[in-house]
Image 1 (cartoon, one colour):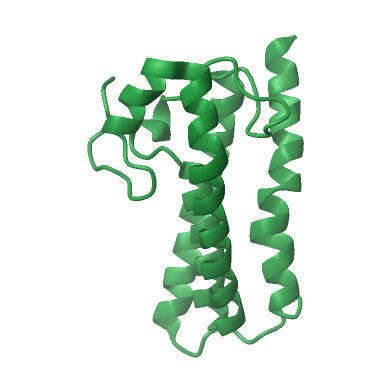
Image 2 (cartoon, helix red, strand yellow; image 1 turned 180 degrees about the vertical axis):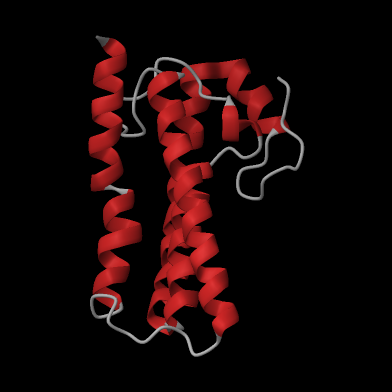
Length: 165
């Protein structure tokens, strides 16, 4: 039953948080994606690839929270265990990196300065939230295990080889 609750809660949070941040807000900023696509085909391709790859990473990261951590990314229903498998062996904040990548992909796809500016603002807010809330909370909850993880896995730029901790 715990696993079902974790999956359902993660699915709801996926729609509520990344769905709004990487979907609804860029959609509104781009006038409901009605802007013409970038006149530069390379930007269209790069934006599209970035969006698809980041969406796959985001779904993988959410699945790890539900299946490995038996919880959700929502602070009100946190995981029981520290999630350090899969993509989390390469980067500590893959959800944030993926959401930002989706937003940047849309900025490229539409050649939109408003979406690019929004990406910079969202990045600053995410980094601040991680530093002021998530890292202290995880350190308090998981102690030495989180300290070792944080020491070995970068927060924002993925390491090439997976951490084997």
